[in-house]
Image (cartoon, rainbow, N blue to C red; front, side, top):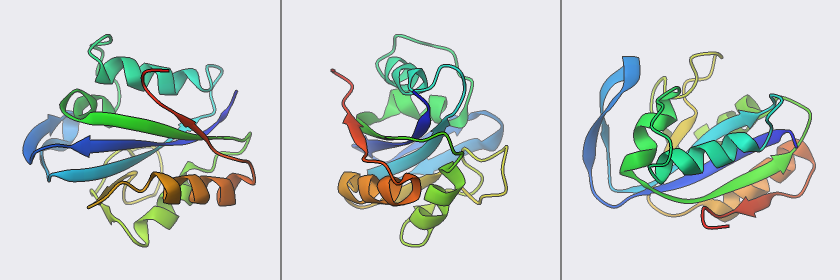
Length: 145
């Protein structure tokens, strides 16, 4: 199934992490929301891949988020089925009230960021944003499912 998703992550402590070509970045304690696209042939399997990286079952570092996942707690993925490439729409909405990390996860588009910091868990808000963008109900996927 194709769609868009938002990974909800929690950093339990402040930490500097090397993120590929972006170099060493400072991550504060709190919650992060990463916007991604599952438009390829594998669709929602992209989310499963992220879960595997977070759990240490996949050591390949292909995207910026792959460097952050092993250092954070992956709370859930908010997934909205859609055939449309709407990840930049969702990122733009999140950027209006969350703090983006410059150039993170958006090397293939014109967005300022696809990773956003918030003090609290915004799973509900992310679900509403994805539903509003796609017109479809969001599905909450937990890593232990």
